[in-house]
Image (cartoon, rainbow, N blue to C red; front, side, top):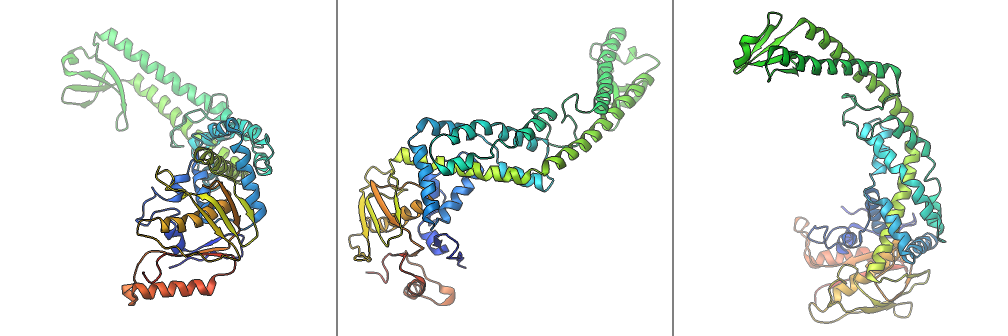
Length: 444
């Protein structure tokens, strides 16, 4: 089933057939490698990767917004050191977009909050880097990045650097956050120290070097002694369990400390869980602000990815206009240009020559020439530089494609019938700003 986006929402319309034929996100055989997205993706974050896909699948038709993206890419293109610094700041950054969603739904754990704090720690440097240069889009992305500095401090001052995954396991908060929690921890700690001391004392007193104090859920704390030393066990030891090569015992003193340790530990964990839920609820009110910052980070990531790719591949800044005109000098296919044998080609379409007919042998490059014209227009309207020496792109509103042979046996439609249906669909919907690519219609 074809999905049609609203033609009047400021985006270039690409239906499912065109998305597939131009191999924007997947190749015709369904692989990501070899697609346009895969070949140009130099993003450093998951949120950037998602936004890049959104920009490529839904290019713009608004000349001003396209120009602002080109200006931002150009600003980074001309400042390689600043570009490297921005990309270094984005390296290994957690997915703030997903983290803000988890926070909004009350599903964050302590590690998620630490990840939020780590993201926010990078904002002051990013804000400084983006405020340099003369790009309005980069300046607007820098605004408000550092507004949640207090939230960053709140999280880092309360939660330890590497908390456990579960909020039921305790060990989340730093010391000095809650007096009651510190008291309970101290009691549990005191008991743990007593156990170590008790173990070493009993080993020495009874002359049993391998005596061990252990713990499990079924029996709690117990003293384990191997069968070879059972004759040294004193009268105050009560047998708990007999094993194949060892006996397990307890004493009144051990039972008393066990109660103190386990009670304090359980109460401490329960209190930590309450404290964490309270902290999470207070931070959740910032989830919208975090989502806004995440969107700005994603935008910066995509723009810096465009700039890096343009520098690597010597792409040019396209000139965007409202005329019904496409003029590309030495254009290349953005995916296939890496092949050293690729020959660049010019394209010129305007009101006088709005129709081009290509002829030539099989494997001569006709389909590549067709596709690269559409891909260069899509890249330009997404805000990217393009693989050419020079490019003037008149904004197009839709791209139609009729590529490759396929029939629809289930509905009793032959390949020729399918081609005629698709061409009729184009003729009904195409306007004066549409780009139509027909590859071998009707064969030979």
